[in-house]
Image 1 (tube, rainbow, N blue to C red):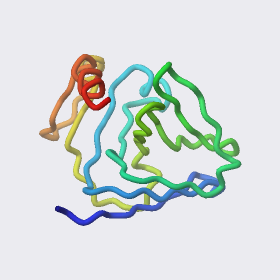
Image 2 (cartoon, rainbow, N blue to C red; image 1 turned 45 degrees about the vertical axis):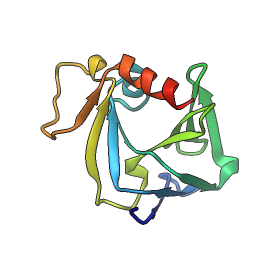
Image 3 (cartoon, one colour; image 1 turned 90 degrees about the vertical axis):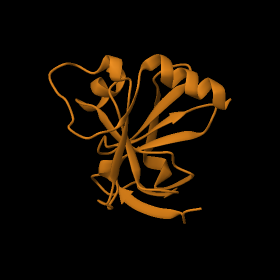
Image 4 (spheres, one colour; image 1 turned 60 degrees about the horizontal axis):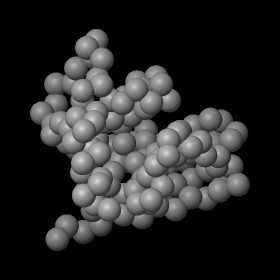
Length: 140
């Protein structure tokens, strides 16, 4: 079993800090229309996160983006802090928040919603919207 790694980061203004624990250095990209609208492009996220802690929690606001998920951001500077599945406590942390740069881009989700105007050259595992929902319903 691989040893767990901790990664730290903070928002643009520094009001919110985050520490995550992961078993590996894998990141995924979400191409869903909500992630693209939220950040102006696909969401590059560190996941699965085994543990997450925040400092400056009084500066965190959340938006319930669906029945099953919410998105967190800094009230002061607007930095995107997380995407979280409400029932599973599953966090996806935007990789740009974190100081680490030694990432392995291994997966793309909602690939059926990806616009045609961009394509990544990386060889990754790709899941459609239907496959993503099936994967999470099997984990429940």
